[in-house]
Image 1 (tube, each protein chain N blue to C red):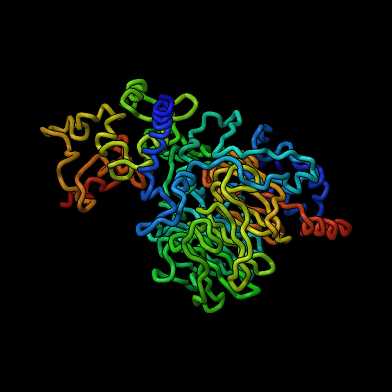
Image 2 (image 1 turned 135 degrees about the vertical axis):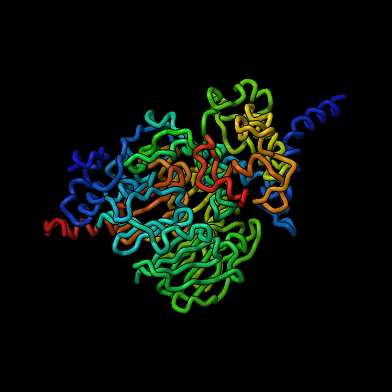
Length: 276
Length: 362
């Protein structure tokens, strides 16, 4: 009797890890492989690119520290952030986004931005940014450009977002000590999914999970006297060959313009598709 | 002076202040003057020294950081603020070049100048500069992953050559020059190898390494290279969590580090640089610090910890060390270059040499 119980226990413990591993092996996040073959005998090696095992290292006091009588740490904190009082509330990439960005730097993987301060990029004051005060020189505005914010607090009031409890119930992953931070992994599942860009859900569905005020697809043309809203699906995207229209046609979440509100759209934005 | 600049000056160790009459001291003072607002860091329980408690005997001193042209004392082309910098290199005159999302920015704190090298990012869509190196004759080498080339600029911003191309390079991301042996090393993270070019003719001479996990002289996503005074080539083998050393002929010598989170290990090794005493500095983006090794791979020291402020990094990447043993570390968020001084033999000698004369600034 003992063995089956143990086996079930073991299986139940291994199952989540096993699923993740099954997803990683051979995927883009398996850095032991390329498209043709695996370069590792060790099947667990794929995990360790992001999940760094403890230990390793020199096992003795660094020479200069010995001279200076400084005690070294046994382990370095990984992707840590020690807040100084002044910057405690600074929007910044959280630890799990830093894991992504540590490879998505253009050298190892595609360079991603993290314009969490995008909200602050609308109005520039005369002052320049300063090394230790990144928001110096920016005044908050509602205009978002660049990338979808990450490393920010999920902030439902006024933004047309689902309440935080409702969002959590719908499976939105929020991070940080208060579990209220939007990070890369709020939209993307690094352990692979069936959807493009490792998204948790199909694109429009994913956006509408949080942006509930857009769930019915009516926003742009509402009040303009048109019967329906601007289509967001089911028609070919004139800008991206082979793809259908989606929220991302106008609101590309990375490296383009996120337009809030629409009146601040750059000149000729509509003309990108509506060529006269 | 400090007050009218509106700067809160980081309190320097007494030892450095006492040398302020020396040339080195003046250089430091200049850096301080044009240094940004440096908030006294609260000494935290992090991994590395937080610079408020840097002792007189510490070998690494924090100097300041530059995020925008304001920090560098202004510039002719309006305000330039770094977006997401990656690499840094400094020429003999003290001009600092930073690769930054589709453009190469330069800061010259001593001359209160800043600007762009070459097109200044107008051609951003076709440019993704990453690693950068400078030769003593003032040539600037930039690995451009979008162009699959290494561009060579002269100090006046003219593009004088381009090296490589789609056939030879897939994702060039790190460069180093070996002037003694006339070599230009380009590390390619997609071909998992180092391409060796002639420093004069820019012709491909050979390649070093191929894809492999854990095997010696094979690479898995190598990202950075550096060369020491003896011509030893150090390659950061990021995806194998180690640094591999090769002699000038490309023969494998040894390996430093391995996966882990203890001092001496690596989790996300990135930039690499060598100081005047051939110490090897390796940036780790996960540890948010810089580890210093000797040529044999023995860990000497580490500095830096996670956060924002002096000696704190959030997402460090490139590193460079200039002729005066000043260390420049790029932090990709919020986009800044941190500056430190290695107070080694060269620094001490310079201090002693210039102290008795008492000539002060020049």
